[in-house]
Length: 165
Image (tube, rainbow, N blue to C red; front, top):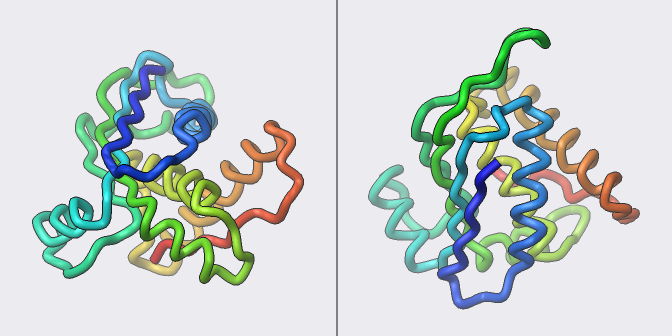
């Protein structure tokens, strides 16, 4: 899996954890091991510009996903996953920090960025949360992936509740 993490935010973030959880999520979703992903970490001003440009919404947001080849997880266990460019995930640590502090189970900015990375991966794979059934499926997968990764890494604290709307 080729994953690039580029921190342009000026904020120190755990880039290795972002890389590791993205790799874990893609493997768990059975995405081809030669597929490519880019994760860009930006400041609030840059995120706000992207949010306005692409969503026509004011203010910065926590995560945005820009799919490329519209890869999807294989439908069957014996199906060969396609290879390609997944796209870009853009994260904003300033928003992540605030969300982590305000979440029912308070957690760090880095823990929120890990959650948001998985959220972004799922969006790149075609998952959405506009409808209640879609939201239940996506947030269920998101929690399972984050919990699985944290268990594998030996993280013993509570999992952060989803704060993505």
